Image 1 (cartoon, rainbow, N blue to C red):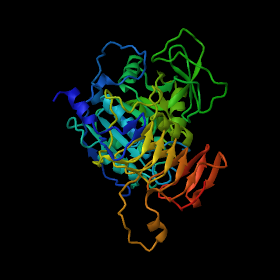
Image 2: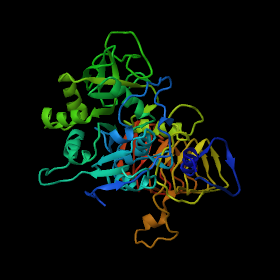
Image 3: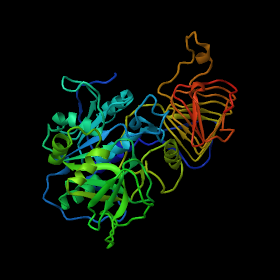
Image 4: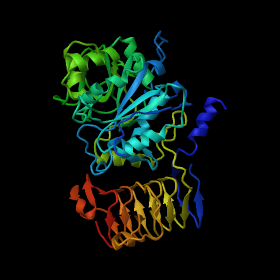
Length: 499
């Protein structure tokens, strides 16, 4: 089997079912496709996707081949599972940001790791700490069957304590510094530092080419696709040669639409422009070691301490413009909209159906979804669901979801379940026994996010009836964020509840 055929074969079964038109059936089956372990989990992974199959910018031009070591032998990725000041609570109450499910069958980290695989980066370290049990489990299993050589791996490095380090990771810089002994096992020339919870497609090889052409010490990816906003990774003031003159955590002057950093857009404008950092850094190996061990040995954070320090030291720090789709998942509203975009037949949003640059994830080996007497419109349905006599519109239905007769679900994200519940549970807790995992009969849900394993009873109404923008009712199993009702993981919503 050739590589392209193999890539297509592997992609089968990795996509949720997208329902763009009304589906009405009598009986229809849709075929879809530890706490911290401080020892190393070196996993052999394989990519059948050509390195050039992923495009970072729609108008990007190819530069001539350069005499540098192959990317798969010279660049390693460092992926972080958590970000600064996350506003995704309560979705992060029992999991890290990178482990949050999205689009019916994936997790956020899958997009970042898939970018690495498609960009021919074969050595990937996932540094994890907070609520990392599910993330560690996912990373350890999801990419182990892709194998592409004896030295390719995705390796989990969980936070640890040792004789010289009594505390946990104090930040991204502290984490990398304490793991340098492991990161230096291979003769890498650069390290690519990545947030593991963003949604975008980028060919990192283009960033690497720009970095090497400019003979930069550090190259920072910056978003120029939309008007400046504050994702929490700071702002770059760049000159006409795309060199970073100043790094600021906050934008002091008004937003500026820019067209000048190196990437897909160029300009003769010589005035400094402010652009949004994506928190993606390509750093030379020797530069990283000097910064962390010599110049800033007490620094805890790469974003707020190391990068500004490198600029102030006069190091050559370059900006690389990225004009593609990028969602930084800074809040519940952004996460909700990213999911809603998957239900629409437009070019807006992340393309989960791109066979040239597939998104890799854990294979669950679930049965096909069973739909009985239901009406489903413009929705994404994951594997293993049981949808019985319900109406679903503009909704993402996660794996193993169960929705009862007469239920109506609109414009919502249902994350599904991590297990199939037995038909009869032997339990003294009648509250749990009487309300099974899933959505009960004659329940109505609109503009909501329902986390995994939630038990929503019969005749429940979740529509934000008071049109509240914010609300904290965790004791009752839900909160409201930006007008979106979020039902907590494993919450129990009794029969007849109105929210």
